[in-house]
Image (tube, rainbow, N blue to C red; front, side, top):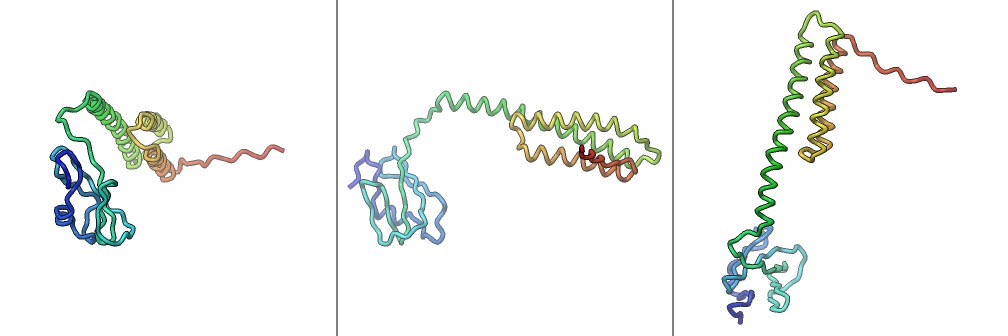
Length: 188
């Protein structure tokens, strides 16, 4: 029999509270007989067979699936200082990351607007692309900074830089300004 300080469960209360394995959730929390102890259980998907409980291991078997119970420490109602510090840091980092991403998106939009304006312009000159290349360079810089600090994955950053380069190349091809890089002649 379980005591008030023991985190053991009675089999009848546990078997009544467990759902059938066909509709069992991935994780399940159960209250023990002691109000301070909290047990979490999870289903393992390998057959065991039979029904029973082991007081020494804290395991319960039901309908061929094993339910593993692990006791969590009681909640004191007070957060440690490290949790509060982590929350403050997360707030600071979220604000900074949002600002970096916003700047990156703004610079990308400026490039896209300038390229669209150049595409629609009837008498566009090849020298006008130089100003857009400077804007693309600034956008690349903002993307690289965002990736460097970890606010965005590097593959996402590469994808966005590729988008800018493709859009610029498409305008150059449409206008007839695109000249593919000539491969250097092999040194003999």
